[in-house]
Image 1 (cartoon, rainbow, N blue to C red):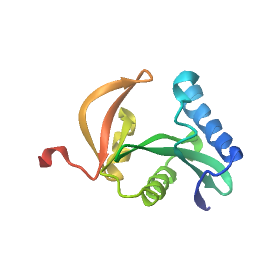
Image 2 (image 1 turned 90 degrees about the vertical axis):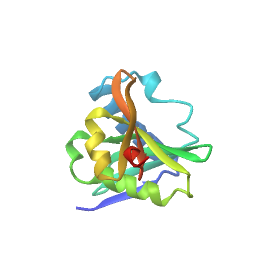
Image 3 (image 1 turned 180 degrees about the vertical axis):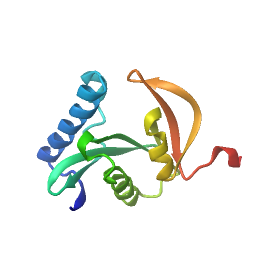
Length: 145
């Protein structure tokens, strides 16, 4: 079984990513469509994960000044625990050009996954799309300061 990650370069790839996000965030988690799809969809670097040629995961990142925000991580339920999310993170990190900070807003249930992949929680919990989140920064330990 082969996992392949690509940067999306076509409308077809973007639609495949949107279908995955629709299934995970809107259908599974109850996020409203107007919150899921935003003005950053076309300007972000979008990625698609394939498992044996089937699109099963997606994520994106965007530059905000000198920082990078990773977001919209979604893997179809039946393909979780196959290391697809980890491979998405690795591929995205390789494509970044030396940002001063890499961060994301993790759903509380996903914090252990991101910790295993080098992210550290900072700050307080907050609501985003009616789901509890916490900011996490790559390679940063708050207690080090």
